Length: 340
Image 1 (cartoon, helix red, strand yellow):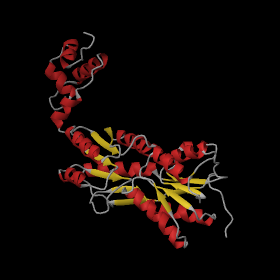
Image 2: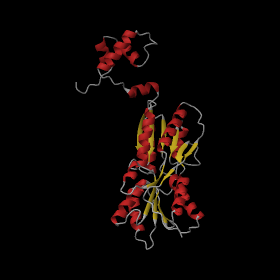
Image 3: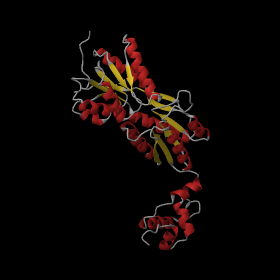
Image 4: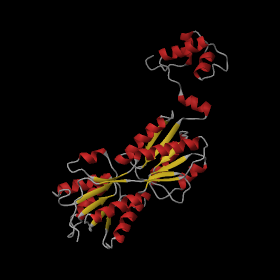
């Protein structure tokens, strides 16, 4: 039959050995039952010839292990989270595990439901970028014994290891740099207001303005999406007094911002400057390369996976909270103004 899946009976029939012998060899128990090397080789050769694929589900039931890790992010449409997913998947593969990747769509109810579904698949660990300000559902899963690591976003009062960028420092240093370049009218287009990353970036922006005795500020927006960047930029451009620079808190917001500026025939940076949080290779190849705060995605991913497998092996973690330094990359999208 064309759809027949090869099983141990097929291997036994072709090899001339018993199904018990075949089963013991394929399950790594040949030595324990003193099966000869010749028989072992015969079983393995026949299995290869028949393109035998082990029944992983049955194996999981016997061992109680799934060799599966779950990764949950707020949006795979966001290049930042897509890169994280790619790098974490690569790191987990190095350990002989597979990754189930889930997208919560920045919706706490979807996150809760997806988490229940993932638990039912007997995952062995979870790496999560939480989308909301509530962590009770994550805590309940952790209390059941599932190893969990938070990345990017996290909860200060929730006792779970996290790895993130120092978002406060990134926004603070960026705003100070803009001020040093003569900018005083700096509008910030933010993402999800209550997310940890957004809260810290906004605080860094505000503190830098306050230190420079700049009392006027503008924070708009409510989502890490292209549409948010587009709509908020359209509204900003209707103001009588426009900003000299727009600081977007994600590169998805920046894409929407650039679209709106182009529609209004405004040039970057001649007419208005633009800088964003999050780097991506495409930013360098725009007609005007976009300045950004780059996050160490590779190191965040590596440390997260290393921490998770230490927990899986019941090893103590050296530290529970890791904040990595961002890098400010000034390109051609920010114009230097005359300083008063």
